[in-house]
Amino acid sequence: MVLLESAWVCEKTHAWHAPGIGTIELLSRKRFTQWVTIHSSTLIKMRLRKNFCVPPCQNQVRRSLGRAVRVSFAIAIGACFSAQVLATPEKAASYYEDALKRYEKNELPAAIIQLKNALQQDSKMLAAHLLLGKALLRSGNLKGAEAAFQEALSQGVNRGEVALPLGQVYLALGRPEAVIEGILPSGLSPALQVEVLTMRANAYFDQGKITQATQSLENARAIDPKSASPLIAEVPMLLGAGKIDQAKEKANKALELAPNNAYAWNAKASVLHSAFDVSGALAAYDKVLSLAPNHVDARIARAALLIDLKRDSDARKDLDFLRTIAEDEPRAAYLRAVLAGHQGDGPALSAALTEVTRTIDTLPPAWLARREQLLMAAALAHHGLGNYQKSREYLDTIVTRNPRNMGAKKLLASVYIEAKDYGRAQPLLESLNRATPDDPQIMFMLGSLHLTQKHYAQASDLLERAATRTDSAEMKRSLAFSQLGVGQIEKGIGNLEKAFAANPADSQAGMSLAMIYMRLAKTDKVRSARTTSRKTCRSHPPSNQGRRSSTHRSHAFISADRTAPESETGRSGFESGQDTRHALRYEPERSAHVGANLSGDRRCSKRANSPDRCYPISRVQCKIPGHYCLDAISRR
Image (spheres, rainbow, N blue to C red):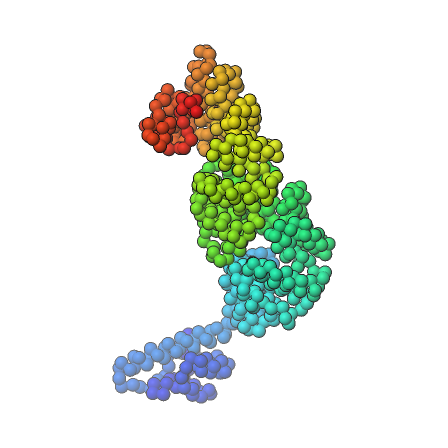
């Protein structure tokens, strides 16, 4: 607190008087601040004391009030003087230099603190405002970055220094209109004009204004035909329109102009990925990450591709790296859920899917509506959690915005099927089958839909064509069921055997085979199936409860071979009981029908709506649709 010797405040005129300075009326804070700034050198030289000299006052209340006013003014002046004494351009420059070094090392929190310290020393340091905006942008604080850039502009920073980063902030905040209205190319250098026009094209594309986006890119190419930026920006637009050949041409041209540009290589990788050139896409993603290890989109795409190639350990390395550079990235969380599903880790799967939905559901809808990848991740996550209505909402948004998104349409058809809304599922799948007649997944879904409706001939034709194009055990199992439905017993059994051999944990295939073998009295076949099932059952660790209980159900059913010789019934019965108890422990409702069958309890519900459902051992009616006791299955 700074007090001035021989200075005093007149209580009548409220004027401040100091020797050598004169008198000033304290009419406003602004005038007071201006006065302090003008006479700071004189004031600082004065000696300090604790009290003001004030004329005597007869009224005790007025005297106390006057003292309080004088002390408050003293404190205010002291703060002003202390700041002026301590704040120096040299300290501001020192803070800035340290912040710049930390920014270059990507030590963003420390850099931001030092930049704020620099601005406390010198609030008009334009370089500090500009670097603060960039640091906040890189750290994900978009609102703070916007405020820093706007402050730099208001203090007179060159518009060219702010145009690109501020435009990136607007796009990240989902405000493409702000880019179009506020980030203009006029008055900038030719190189900056190209980048700004490319950014404006992306803003137009986000708004669905394809014509304006294309025109903006043409204007950019007219300024600098050798710039790769407009070509790179055009690739995703062409891919979204299904023009893969044109996108490939643009990506190749961009690489000719900028062979070491990570974004050009990512555009090339995206084209190859879309064209199902797996090896080419993987090599291109490798090149991207060798040039820019922190390229989030490329690392996510490579991880997804590695998962498709069943290289889970390599994919996990990418996902672990993403935790260090993009901890809250929901697409990475979804891929972690996929890996957890491959391992049969139910808790990890649920936690990862919940993380995806928690992150994406809180995003602004207007911004999210223009991000197809995030919409798809949310739809898949909600679908995996059984939230079919929420999944459908996201899928409707995708399909409305981009009717060419085949993946979204497939998932939407799957949601319809699971909701038993066959009236919507069938026409959607039929239209997809016409558009892509060689897609085995669409054939499989449409064939499975016909199988559900007991249209066995149509189902068999579609599923057989799908099975010839892929080696999926699930497709072979569905094909087998359709063949059995139309009376092609030998073919059906053959495909069911192939499906069970490919995936011995498939309880549906295993139990169906066991039933057929028992009815046909093929004791040796039942014995072989039991041996395979036992090995598979033991191969699953106890932590994989969901997968293991499913396998135990299958083994319990197969082990209960009532056609086996007397010498084997004891062992098979013991194994059956063990596996039944394990399945009932982890999934009591889903395994109840097995317990009822193997305990000899063949009593079935006589209710009209479910005449063949079993009562489980716990005497609670089985609530899992499609689970029937052995006698009921045999009758069917």
